[in-house]
View 1: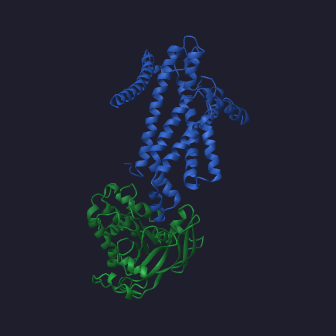
View 2: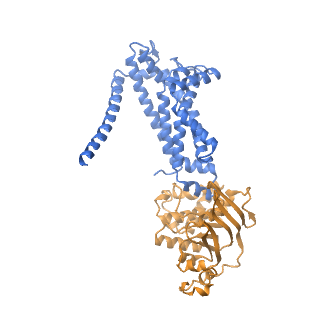
View 3: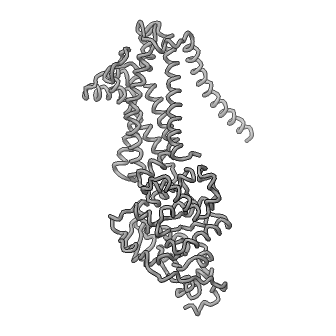
Amino acid sequence: MFQRDRLFTLIVWSAALLVVLIFASFIGNIIYYGLKNFSFLYLWSNPINTGREGGIFPIIISTLLILLVCMTVAIPLSLCTAIFLTEFTSQENILARFIRRSIDVLSGVPSIVFGLFGNAFFSVKLGLGFSILSGGLTLACMVLPIMIRLTQEGLRAVPPEYSLSGSALGISRSQILLHLLLPAAAPSVIVGLVLGVGRALAETAALVFTSGYVDRLPQSLWDSGRALSVHIYDLSMNVPGGETSAYKSAFTLLILVFFINSITTQLTKLWLQKRIILQ
Amino acid sequence: MNKELPEFYPSLPLKIRPDCCEPSPHFQIENLSLKYGSKFAFRNIKLTLNRGCITALVGPSGCGKTSFLMCLNRLIELIPGASVTGEIFFDTQDLMKAKTPVIELRRKVGMIFQKPNPFPQTIRKNIEFPLKEHGILDPIKRREILERALTDVGLWQEVKDRLEAPALTLSGGQQQRLCIARAIALEPEVLLMDEPCSSLDPISSGVVEDLIASLRQRFTVLIVTHNLAQARRIADYVAFFWLEDGAGSLIESGPTKQIFNEPRHKLTAAYIGGLRG
């Protein structure tokens, strides 16, 4: 018995260590090669010679714009859908079941399929062409399922007393939601947001078909713009001698994800703390 | 019937209550039944609550006392699968009408839950948030109401220096008094209380009980309690629920003195005598 316990402990520990090791070596690799001859000028200048030299300024702007479009659409949509599913319908409701099933299916669709759909629908059918707008909207479709699911889980975990005691005091449903339920569900909503942002920033395949390849500074949302992930893919696959720059871009992407996530988390917490006190 | 069971009568002297003025009905409930799905929670309840009096609802668990309370402020409609039939008149207002303005009704008919449930906000916000929702936008006025409500429940001296502290840092008894303050800040006419003392320690329970007794005449109070001694101490009227055929029903109701001294029904006598339940 004792022997078996020790073996078990050993397996659990080595598995955990292995995960940490993989993660550390992977991050370390990017930081090591990315920081090699990295300068802030890299962030501020235009790419030269298809990205082998120069910087990535227009690419960062395109990435941020695509993310902005994506989140502007995905956040309200996912919040409202989650609220509808948890607060306005019962579990057995046919429409709710249909929506839940759609979300399940949607979350299992490979990103390349989203890319093809985005291309066919946003670029061609709606005539948006290869643009930041079609890219952002395609990404919004992609991140919706995860954001809805986590918001829903957060709302479900809120103790039912909040809702009951609020209603018993004659507070309207919308105010209970805004002041009590959503703030209480916030930790989960934030996780959804962070995962959504991460997934959107990491996406390559879907964007190749929708927001395109152009590495100039976009003049409007209707312009094509190259996202960082696409840039990394292009540098490492299609541009001989682009590896150094690819590493630097990957490093930038990591920092970007980190920054955006901490800013969203802090802002959401700040907004919430005005409403309720999270333990 | 009471002649057969004399030995069960409580022998303690009753605190005689003035029959709080002329009884005038505030709530009239006729033939009220509640079903969850196809199962009756209670059936054919007929009860009148008199203005300014404390009515205690006693009886074993699971006979629909809490659900009954929730019918009176229509909170029951938030419970999936619940369907109510019968008549409830609040003054002259027919509450069973679909068009009843529930927000306004719930301001007039406050409710206190078994477990203290302050919002996870500061003490001040707990009272001011509902006030704001009911259109009291002047901060000075809200502040006055806050102080008055907290004074009424005897909490003002205890919390006046820490109004910005989270309400959940208060003790259980304080939390429950805060919940009562939150309800009376809205100047309701009726307070529904669902075992407000049962999750509190004996000392806090005593404090809350005295508070409830002090609300007599200012509010019409309907209080569910499992504590018969408590019902006897504070209630003017007692209504006794019991399970019949798996559904709650009202066995007997009347002035506290009568229910405890001369119960008309055998079950009532057995219950208050401690023989059953």
